[in-house]
Length: 628
Image (cartoon, rainbow, N blue to C red; front, side):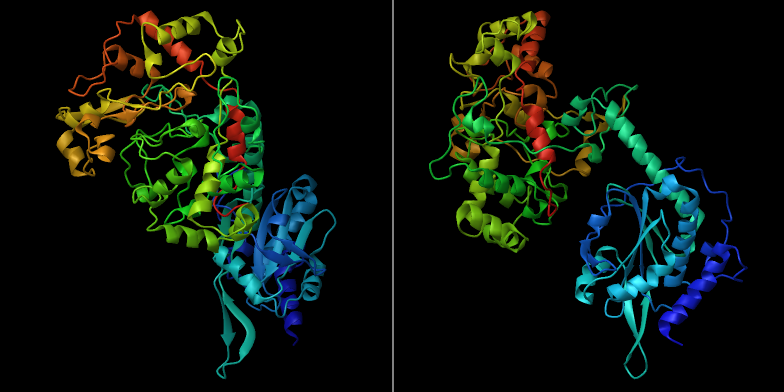
């Protein structure tokens, strides 16, 4: 008997029950039987996302090229893999039979049918040509129900798809070593939502039409709920930490996590702040040997969010400099690199980094183009073993060679990679804050009375402006110098307590012996600040003065993230820092009242630029890893 006719016959047998003609007899799979339990109602359970469904080039039954992702996104998808000549009743015919039963259900539920697409892809492209798949699928076509049959040009084109979906496949040979036209494979059917996320994977034992229908409805209901929640979501939450821990110290804390799928954005004109600096900032300094262009900034942006720049392809620049967390990390006092490796210091913000004369907390670098390479090569950050290793990875990543040649007229190298990332960082400028509009824009209504009193303290009694400089023309809020405030001294020389209070849940704390914590902790390295660069004893525990622009977005504070709030910072300086032999002469008790500190905090909160959302939205629109 012809193999296709045999398969058609097997399918006919398996479909008799679905059409109500007869009992097919004993089945090897429960999928041809009713469920042995009462299935939960759609929407009463949750199907977690299992990851993005893989893409791949395919052909439709007319021989036209498409990709799997072209066929996803607008509808929920059920994807099955078959080959037309399969004769295993618990293999391809079973998958097609179950999808056929689902198709019959869809005829009775036209609204559900509009939201579902059935895809059947052959893993035998040599035999299953577009014409063959058209013939195979002809009997299953029904008005109002979309069921597409697909193939590929070759086994080589198919293999990446099979690998991504973990479809193991082996050809079966006879005792003469000749291919029998059959395959050994494990049957799997994949449920994929409108966000192209895998939501369930069904094997033979769980391939039951009623269960699949309920899962499809559950995914659709979850999508509607997500859309409703997105409408109600305070847009301000989109531009804060994804898992907001505000008031986590209280027992009545409730989580307000933000789904990644809600974090969508729009590309921005990043050169806008170069052409016209925001009110309160001077002209952006741009090196003569690295002029800014849109293509160069776009390339740097792509690199900034690419995890492949790390040793194990897991860590990008943006995983420490998190856009929605002030291009720093609100959730950790000190940074963490690949594999959870400890970094000694707090992640500095990149906002307005274009104006920095010195970079890093100890001012060890003087140009963004050079700064880029230190985290790329640091063992506890991105972990790459050498410059050449990074360059080779970029060269071997699809698309980068062409982009570098377009921008620099040559392929990736140490100089051009640093220039590209620096160019993106140089566009992240933010000002025109309420303070700027009041002080430089002469808008008397832009800043409230409390913040105005705070500014008077800032430049007067509190003496903050001695280091955080404000001029008549602009304000960078830094002197680009280094100072010893006592924070570093206290961390290095302070007495270790016998126990440490540890929070284990909202509002729940326990005291843990320091000895026990030490037994499971990495030995904390000492940090001497600028001294490590100059070896000058006078530079012990000196750290760079950070800018105060957008300061309300960049907690925790100080070089080691030891102060969690602006109020704690103000209280620290009000006490006169921590006394030590190298304490900066400008650090002394301030004698501020509680009202003074409230006013000063109000002023600091008024330093947030008006284009933060635009820059963060652009970051959300950037490609991540190898995704475009």
